[in-house]
Figure 1 (cartoon, rainbow, N blue to C red):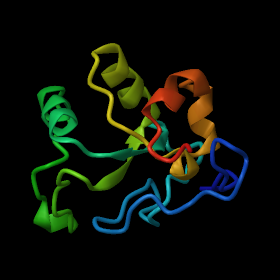
Figure 2 (cartoon, helix red, strand yellow):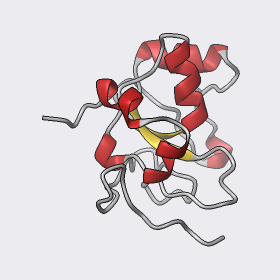
Figure 3 (cartoon, helix red, strand yellow):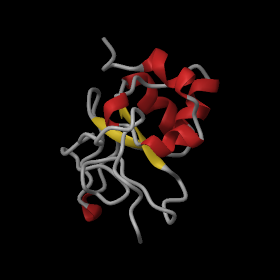
Figure 4 (cartoon, rainbow, N blue to C red):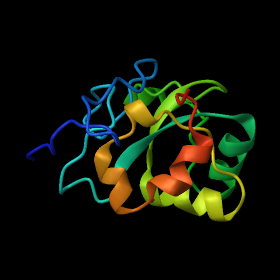
Length: 125
C-alpha cells in the first residue's frame, strides 16, 4: 500500500489528528490515505454528542468500545479521521461535526469542496 503524500488541504505537512484513540487508515494518528483506503478516511473531525448519535443511527457506531480491537470508543471532544463521504452525508443531514483543516488530508478535497469544509473549521483564524 503506497501512501499518498502526507499533505493537508492547504498543501502543507499533514498534522496529527488523534492519538487517544489512535486514528487514521494506517493507525498512525494522521488522516493519511492510499488507493486501498476506499472509504477515504481523510477528514479530521472533533466528535460531538450529536454526531456520535447520528453516526450510530447510520450504522457506524464510533462510541461503543471494541476491546478486542483495542478501540476504547470515541468520547465527545475526541478527534478522528472520518470518511469524507460520511462527513458529506452528515452535512446533507445537517449533522456534520466540526473539523480541523490542518489535520485533514488534501485528498478529502476530491470528495468535499473546500467551500463546504471551511464553515466547519476549528482551526481558521
